[in-house]
Image (cartoon, rainbow, N blue to C red; front, side, top):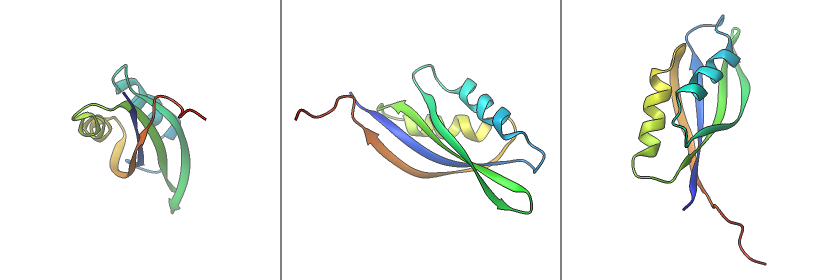
Length: 95
């Protein structure tokens, strides 16, 4: 079975929000089968920055909706947007 890679753009409540703490809080709320694969900070305007993060989760029915629900209810998160979803293979193809 494969996995999903869900790329999200997450905006904090305000400019004083510690973005690394926000990422850690989201990561702590994810199911044990999902994890944040990587993230970067993207400046928006007037001191506000967004986090672009990749969440890897198992390919199960309803998993993307579960991840969205968790991120939307995470502390210090104002808004989020799913930018892309792709399928990640569990195995490399043979040569």
